[in-house]
Structures are given as C-alpha cells and as structure tokens.
Image (cartoon, rainbow, N blue to C red; front, side, top):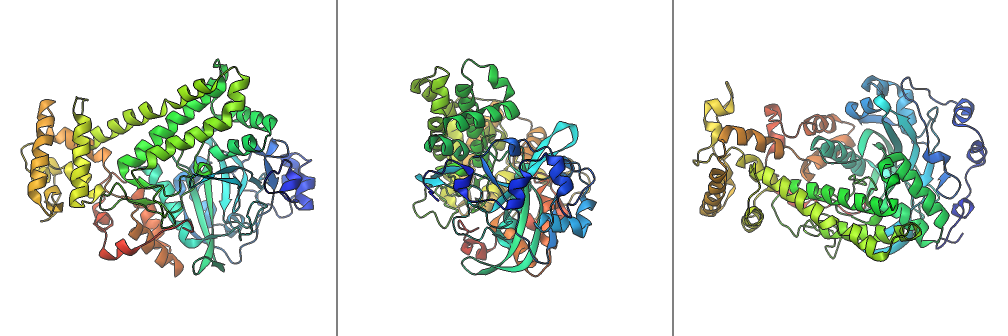
Length: 545
C-alpha cells in the first residue's frame, strides 16, 4: 500500500467482505439484512455521504467494546435528531453506541482526508478512530451526521488502536455542549459510553466511545487530500456536494469556488473571534481540524484561560507555541490560505486567478476585526461604536495580563460595577428581591493585587460609558448576557473525569446541566464559578487529550 499517493479505495485497505457486498445494495436493503440491527423509533437515516463513489471513504465496522455503560447523554442534542433522552436507557441503545450492535439504516464508514499539522504537510490522515454511522434526519428537516469517536481501528489509523479514552471523551462531550451553550458554532455531543477495557497512552487508561454530531464533518483537509494527490474529478465532486448540501446559494455565483472560499474564510474568522472573546484555546488548529462550515471541531488539548496571558499555550505537545491564544487568528487565516490552494484547480476552471483567490482570502481580516470588536464592546458594556474603542480593549487586556487577572471572572464581575463606582449588586433594586448581598471580596476590584491600577482603568471606562449615556441596570443585564459566569475550566473537567473513573458520572451530568446556561447565575452551583484552585495550574493537556 502506497501511503503517499493512494487514489483508489483498494489502496486504502480492504473492507470486510460483508460491507463490500453491502455497498451494492440500497440503504434499506442493508438495514434489513443487518443481523441484529437495532431499530430505534424516531431515528431515521438518509446517508448522502455514503452515496459518493469509491475514493472518499472506506466502509468499516466498529470494534465491539466490552461491557459498556452509559456515562451521560445530552438530551438537547438527542432532541435535534428526534430522540427522547429515555431512548438511551435501553441497554440495546448503549450497545449500539459502543459499536457492539448496528443501528438500522446506518452505513458505517471512515472518511479520507489530509492536512497540515503544526504547519507541516502530514499527507494522508483520515478518520483513524472515528466512524461515521450516517446522516440522521431531525425535526423540521434538520440533518445531522452521527459519528462514533473511539470505535476502533480503520484503514487510516496509522498503526494506532483507534480507541478514545474516557478522559478525552468526557472533555469533548462537555466542551461541545458548553460551546453550544455559549452560542459559539460547534459540533455537538450526543452521548458517552465507557468500558473497563484498557487503553495505553502515557499511562494505562480506560476506553470510551463518544457519539458526536455535525451537519457535516468535512474539513479543510478533505479538499487538501484530493488537490495534493492529483484527483481533480473527486475534488470537484466533493466541492459540488458541499455546495449542494450546505451552500446552495453560492452555486449561482459567477465563480462558486471563489464565493465558497470567501464564505468559509469569513465564517472561520467570526468563529475564532468568538473563541478569543471567551478566552477559548483550541490547542491543535491543524488544517484537518478546521470545519468547512465554520464550526469548532475536534476537541483535544483545549482550554479556557484562567489568569489572562495572551501567550498561553494550552497544548503541552505544542513546544513552539504555534497554537497559543494570541496566535489563533493568524493560524486560522493561514489555514484558510491552505484551503485556497486546495480549491485553486476549481477556481481556475471557473475562470478565476490566483489574485482572485487572494482577494477572497482578504475577507478574513476585516471579518475577524469587525466581529471581535463587536464582541469585546459587548463584554465591556458598550452599546455604541466610538473611536478609541479598540484602544480601550487593548488597555483592558494589557491590564489583565500585567495583574494576572482571571479572564472570565473579571468580565463577569465588571457587569456589576456602576458608573459611580458602586457595586450594583449592593443595591436591592438591582440584584432583585430576596437575592443576598454580595460576599466580601467578590467585587471586580478585589481581583487586583494593585487596586489602584483598576481604579485608573475604570475611570477611563466609566468616562466612555458616560459618553454614550449608559444606564447602569440595562447595561448590567446586557453584560451578563455577553460574559459567561460558567466555563469548562480544566480543573472542573478533571474533577468530573476522576469521579467517572470510579463509575460515578454525577459530576459529568451536573456540569452538562450548568454549562447549558452559562450566562445564568445558578446560585446553587456557585462553587463551579469560583477561581481555580492552586493545583489546577499543574494540569497539563496534550494531543493525547
């Protein structure tokens, strides 16, 4: 097998005889013929990706996971595909999500793609531990691809075991749903099942399978693959499929591929602006981890900022800091240029030039700057746009960095700071009837080792608020909808992981519920919004996470 230039499905490895034969039947025939296939009321598949010809994927079967148990389910995600949460109480459903039993209508496959990893061309990659079950039909015509992550080896596993560990599965499950709660475009997480089966990483861990959902799992690397290996017909077919299914309005553009490049660049720019505004670090922004729909995808060594440091590197494997917090916008733009190169054959066929592609990519910068400025104004409570706002944002972040201030806590507490320097929560009419007065030490100013520096900055901020005639109560409400109280800090995920290893999923399920409403006060969960404990600074996440 030639890993450098596989051009046919046979070069990627032989599929099992049963699945190869099944490829010649209709989906319904295969479902009927599948021995022991589980029919789930309300779950229907229409697998458009599986109808593409050879070369885009390999049909595979999940590897059984012994004695699986259900860790958690996102009932909101389940509702998106028409399933009640009660469906997951059926042991047969748990078996299906563990890869032990086929789902009627599913057509499991592993997709091929390539990519640049840490800035270097990595060649063929593909779904090495993820198996696409199919495209589930949800209420109102919604379509969601369902994927089992950690379901065993595929021809793209490159010698690895194809498994996911409980640790990384819990992190991705919680963060997928947390990002959705924050209003940031993301893939979703449906459920986690776990097993005592050992998996070897830095240490011996236990296995899990995460069921995740997305309108599409196509990524920049999907197009890079066919461009790099000289398969223009497949490149065109993949592009036409993407346009038909997700960007139908672009098909009538003078050059649809230029329009697609511009649209994806702008979506990616707005996505990364949203990451920056909540202090989210992805950790491994390789081109194979970049969504063609502008979604946050492939959660691995991610992290939310605690003490603000623009140079923070959340990925312990990132020795050079390529994917630091401050670098994320530049890396996202660089990745879009890789996508532009992948689309050049199509752009050229439609009469476009390299300069045209550069023009489409030039949309990234303005889209990022406009969205980031909008989000940061909202975080600061500014209802209008004025000259000097960018400088105020920079001064704010410089202050947080110099004083090592917690990013999430600062902006959340800032919403309670009045124009006249009082804490609005101390006013009964502002905090609501019956709500307790704030605890000592809970003001925004209390976060600072040198409070005089906060006072100097706050005087400038208050002057800006007065300039636009800001109303304290109304502004405070707006700021509380722009600044989350709860984010998935690493230490919270770690506590949930430690409990789940003892077969206690209570913390996973509690965090799921809290992170769905990250902007609400939720006083019964107050400790989950606290500053991280000292031991949190010693936590490390890497590409194995």
